[in-house]
Amino acid sequence: MDPGVRAILLLAIATGLTVGAVPYLEQQRTFGSVPGANCTLLVCPPAVSLSLQSYHFNSLTNVTLTIKNTGVLYDALINYVVTDTNGNQWWRIWLPPNQSTTTWWRGPALPPDTTGTAMLIISSTCGNCTYRGSAGAFSQFLNSTSYTVTVVTGRDYQFTFTMHT
Image 1: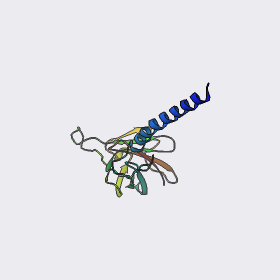
Image 2 (image 1 turned 90 degrees about the vertical axis):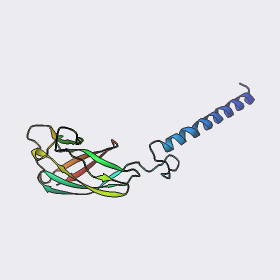
Image 3 (image 1 turned 180 degrees about the vertical axis):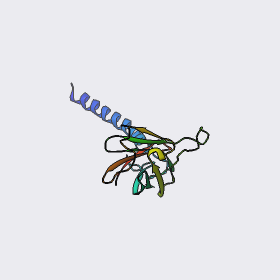
Image 4 (image 1 turned 60 degrees about the horizontal axis):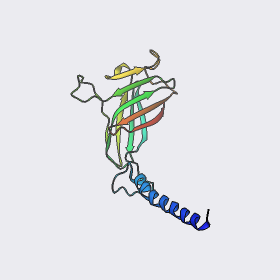
């Protein structure tokens, strides 16, 4: 191939890649972010980000979590799953008040940069909990044991934390 044609061809390809890459990078920079969220190239603050600040076991079937929203959007907790080291789980799912139940759970509302508390209950003391696992294997929190908690937000984000008794 003629060196002049090769140079022109390479220049055309490089120009096309540059022209195509800029809109793509801009799309990636803003995808999932909030307008005005002070994004830099490809780095935006998370829309919702929860961190476990502390937890306290109130009883053998009840734990309180203190959670902070370090993201830029308001959110609220609506579901939780508590899992023991053997994979046995207690699920509590939010049901709107118009459902045929009086025992529905909704965790704290979490505006940006705020902290809220969520009380998680397991075992038969939990109204709308569902148990999945070996029968009778996880009915209370045991000493010197780790548990995994997954909370789900109203925006359908999931966050997982570990607790130790």
